[in-house]
Image 1 (tube, rainbow, N blue to C red):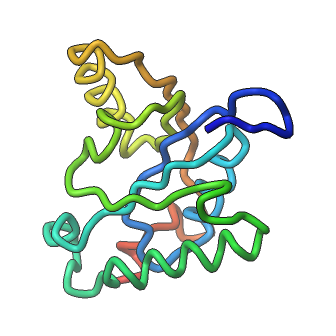
Image 2 (cartoon, helix red, strand yellow):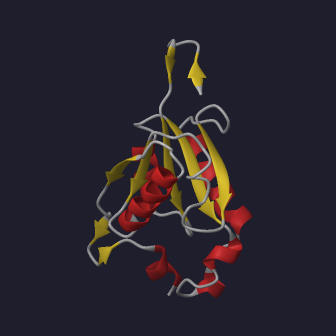
Image 3 (tube, rainbow, N blue to C red):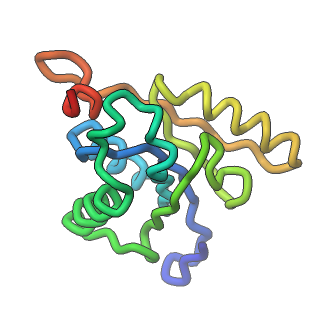
Length: 150
């Protein structure tokens, strides 16, 4: 994406997940992504969530997508201008096709980012710079959708 106003090329960052029951950890993750530029949000398909713990309690793709859009809209971000949401069906998603500069991960998804870079290298694509952030915790430990679904 090219920003005419700034006259510079805007960096792109991939930030993927299931984002079920959008919680403080997700919000922190997404807000962090916007510090790097245009955000390519990979949102897991309903098919991809079937093997997760408490899969029958995971909200559907459209509901999760709408929650993300509502949250980002409350921060002033606009779909198409600041971000896009792309359905993903496996750990690679669109990362082997789309031009991006960074990938945002947690400890849980760090290994996936390394695998993505190995595949990108095979395809003669530039490796993504991996940005790893910590999980958000509360008094009960790590905040997670799995805990909220249980």
